[in-house]
Image (tube, rainbow, N blue to C red):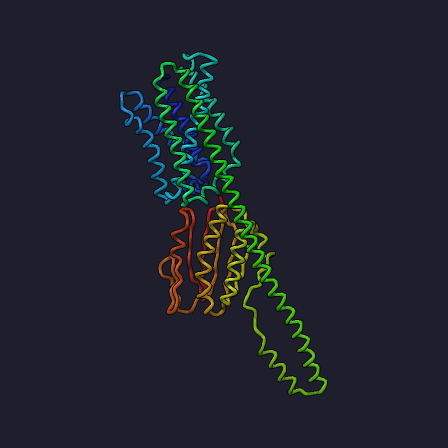
Length: 447
């Protein structure tokens, strides 16, 4: 097998390690929203530090006689740090998908690196390919290809992010993990077997071919899974839009019927009042007016229309908002939705916002329906690069804050602790009371 100097080996490991970490997080923008990774230069520094530690440790164990288990120490160190950071920020739910992407990144980088080394040997010689300058040229070519690849597959970030988010916790996630693990194990076994060959050129070419076949298989499998997911999402979206149209049509018909009834009653009122005036029966006029006025009922709805939700780009989120508006009507609560500016957050951020809405309004509405005024204001806007959810609701005079997630009164308790637990580490939540009003504010990352 090929042997190179310590310096060449360390530089090659640093380069591969850097891009390996970069592509690991390529489809995980949520994992990069923490304090020290949310900016690009901090993330690149993180990639460099982790790959430098791996390169130095791998060089140390590779140039001394050791067993296979000792040679696995750098990998354990490498992945252990990443899993430790994910655990610290409560991101272990992403671990199966993270392993999938790790396997895909490993095979991808190995395939390109093997091709470049094989091409260098064929175009020059084995002695040059294993020299420092030969290794340096191979590293430069690798880095150029990896950078171009990172730009070329940029449009796959959003579909992959949506796929990872939607299959999380489902059987599909673990089936995909099992498939990727089997392919990774097959590649590793081939790699260790082919390293025993005497002819390094044949070993590299054959191994590059195997990596290419596995890479094509992984890519096609991921593409098919992604297309299946997109089709399911499209079908679900069509179903939601159909339900939204039915709800909106029913509400519109109700309002039209109310308008027609009012038009008919209005004519009868005018005729009755006019008749009393014509007969100069002022007592009858006064009594009819009192009867009409006592029969009036103020609207219990904020009369939300589809035009009020134009700034909400997500059809799914529109459906959730309108569904909760109708739920507020059933509870005799006025719900005002304010979206003064268009929401430009990512699909994942809007999905998390939908989860926040579904965990707050159904909790607040039954309590608010017993208060005066029975009114809730929901405001959605983007402030300083973050998605801001604000819910304002009335509270009785004896309302008090119990910790940071509960509002307690003599009759009711508003508990938002489950919402706090479900939020990602980069999200924030604040609950406060001001005179007769309570306000819940949740901020989410937009990226």
